[in-house]
Length: 552
Image 1 (cartoon, helix red, strand yellow):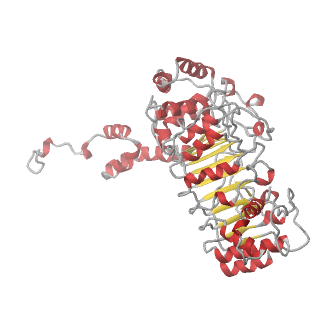
Image 2 (cartoon, rainbow, N blue to C red):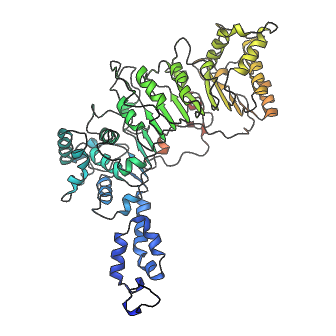
């Protein structure tokens, strides 16, 4: 119709639509379009006041959600599946999983100081599912690669008040979910088919195998943290584990790496099955993962096949971090040398908590500089000083004829690290087993660091505190003040020199990879982290200035 010549009496302007019809239109518009629709005219804007209030309330309540209240998960499920207002689920960007309930009697508000089984003050909360809800929630299990046994198990669990399956379905279907934080530990579905993580693993497997398309929540997920220490009873059973093999969770970590848009994974308490001889090259193909930041906290030995697959899987890994714990990470040098696959992208390789003795290399303390020398993108390096000494010992054939022993060691020290290195963290204690520092150990190392600062044009910071301490102790060597010449040279070259005695204000702010802790749990009881807390490159944690956490 030509609007310029048509009969105006036949036209229906949007401003002439009844208020009731406008409100119905608003209810059928996707949440993302509400604002644009409201801008149509003043009347539509006035009619949108209620929906804007719903947006505001949903953002306030659900932007960061958790399972602390038992009704939150089923409420958001109804929102995500169209059984109620879709706006609440649309606003969920982060979800924190604290505890998987395994009975209706535990459908209580989670207390941080009391287990549900010991909570005698509060009655369980009831919840009634609507007709057809279960069928919608469990449809992926019905048509995926899972067996009828999986479907029946899920039905029984929902009948009995297990909320792990509900949370997994919710995470898979929140349309704008970006990150998930689990206080609950990572255990494979085969060993725990009641947990949220266990069901989530199954959903990811089905999507990877093509049995189901990627659900929107999993497709958009960018960050996953498993086993965040919460300093509550929910974390206590998994602390101070003995150095023995527990349930393997290799498959869970593998599935998280297959998420299509994953960028960051923190995984605590990885445990392998020493008898598992699976070839992981097909399960985790080369360059199949979008992960950019990987942090393995208290990591067990990876095993040859999984180690190779893990290293080759990322398209472009930026940071790799390992923190020692009670588990024993063997063959660290094989991990480092294997990361050559990522040398074009890898900017940070950090080992934290090394003094606890949980990280070992083959015929070295952890790894030698030769493993990383060709990593031209690597900017953050942490290494045992004895491995530098060992590498210098192995490379003595390169000593030039006119060089003194001191000249050789200083030259080697300046040349053995990646050319674009910006920070160097030295840990461990000087040894007399490999090379002879002249005129003394402390003075010889200081001269080598001076040579490094003078020749490494990109260097911003050197961390030396751990070398000054008595091995395995917080106590410093008291025979002399270490690194005084280096401190003065650092000021001249704009290099921060971190020692036990240097109190100069540092010139550079360096963003090291950090693991989440209890203060990163927004729905937890701890509030914000104190502003004066500082990060330790040795522990990989933040703590009060001068606290023991700075060197554990």
